[in-house]
Amino acid sequence: MTTQEVREKFLEFFKARGHVIVPSSSLVSAEDMSVLFTTAGMQQFKPYYTGEKDALKNFGSKNVVSIQKCLRTSDIDEVGDATHLTFFEMFGNFSFGGYGRKEAIEYAHDFITKELELPISYATVYKGSENVPQDKESQTIWKSLGIADVREEDADVFWGPTGNSGPCGPTTEIYCKDTSGKDIEIWNIVFNEYFCNGSREQLDKGEAKLTKLPFLGIDTGMGLERLCAVLQKKESVYETDAFPPGIQNKSQRIIADHERAAIAMMQEGVGPSNVGRGYVLRRLIRRAILHADRIEVKIDERFRDEEARFRKTLQTGLKEFEKGTDPFILFTSYGFPIELTKELAKEKGIALDTKEFKRAFEKHKEISRVGAEKKFKGGLADTSEMSVKYHTATHLLHQALRDVLGKEVQQKGSNITLERLRFDFAFSRKLTDEEKKKVEKIVNEKTKEELPVQKIVLPIAEAEKTGALHFFGGKYGEQVSVYFIGPSLETAYSKEFCGGPHVTNTGTLGVFKIAKEEAVSAGVRRIKAVLQ
Image (tube, rainbow, N blue to C red; front, side, top):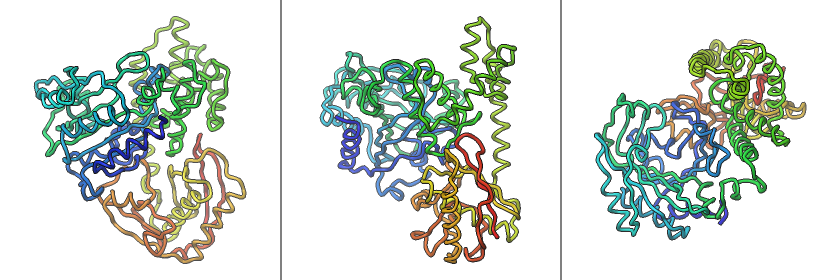
């Protein structure tokens, strides 16, 4: 059974049982600001477990199913073994008060044993703690389904929360045998009964509290690649049809995983940098380059710019390392990876103070975050007539770039003055003269059409459904303003989450001209344009 066949079978199974299919959310969460990337299928549904949002209203059902793109780097050092990945697809069925333990366990049991025809080795249930009772109900349900081996476990089968707070609860896990006969976890079913007002780390330390949620929520997760390794009787996830054939050694596995993850991140508008999401991307690309060098292969051509920077960094960084330059300075000033510094230090018998590095790095990230917020907040230097015109022209430019270059174009920032607009966007190469002319032509055509510019305020879930563009990772309220350029929201040429202000008609803008197009950083381009 191919990975695509498994995807289709999973969605159809739950659709037939009253679940609405919901598309994967972005890897860069627009709503959960407590995490850099989407790490679990339930993240986009967190407000539905707490009652902040109404699933029946937004999805037409209390029960949904999705296949979520996920990215986790917590186990990056394990990538290259048989099962660990940074980027993967997570199957999940979710219920927000629509059904309970019995249905959730029965659905999982039937899909595994009947649809996929895999025997279940054993299941785990929560043994209980001071604040959470033993999960006797799940144990009884499993035994009624003929699973005799049901094991009680403690903290490992209490899941969540993701980020700084959120829904959480006891879980039950399903184990099946891989091709070697080893039992591996296939599916995890979480019973979201509680809300935690802190992180998992704080909860484990007794610094956060659990409160009962108004209804039981079901949250399940099953990794596609790991499941297919079992189904296709492969010794590792890298041997499944989710990856190209011929991946054999550890370096090849790391390159395959990191390139796949990096491409997914770049498609979401993330570019390499030394902080936040950009640092994760840079670390993956550069780690792939190091392993490519070890086995003398070339990396994907999409990373050529970053590779060139890294080659230069290696030359400079190695010289500075030999001089005894501080690891934090090596990283922040020269972009020299701390992982490589550790390896070199180990070779030379030098002890590194990693705690001091982490402390300095966290301070560095906070300074960069505050600076970025100041730089891009609003985008407008003022609200004069000319600045407002440039603001509307920026919306037209954004959509025109997507029309000409493709949907990988994502806004990274903007700045508007009385004299010009500046627009930063995710794109991997220099624009050709022909592409720039096409963009100019589209913007000027929309200006000549004298399109109305209108505003509507919508609940954020409805606004997202309109397809309106917005910052991935942007923090929005329950209600958002959507500015659209065209006669109606449905037929609009451009629509974006935006606070305004804008002109009322594109006919007032004048002639749009690109003055300059240049690189800002790896994977990020900048356009400066004027209205004449």
